[in-house]
Amino acid sequence: MTPEEARRILAESRARIDAIDVQLVMLLNQRTSVVEDIGRAKDAVGLPIYEPKREDDVYRNVLASNAGPMTADALKRIFERIIDEMRSLQRMRRAQREASPESPDRKTPDHKKGQAGC
Picture (cartoon, rainbow, N blue to C red):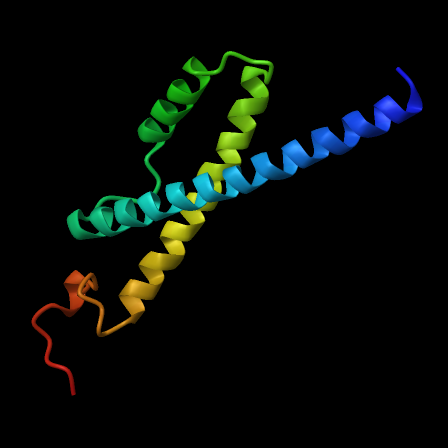
């Protein structure tokens, strides 16, 4: 390979990576929107944010669809990070809903039910 060919390949490959990165950002934001829906639903029925069985299901799903060249371990580490960020987002949104008196999703803690506000 000549230096000119190498520079051309680098430029083309980097342009492809940039386009793929934009797609990844769009997909991650789509996933985040769904996670926000899940967080509201969990709040409505009193489910915890952390559900290890569901996370195991996610790992099984993504690992089963992996045809490489990424290793299973690398893919799992990436999804562990994604899931960790999604949990953080759910915790933040839950705290915002609980702190907002106007929120229709706000739940009154059991120990305050029936108490009049003064």
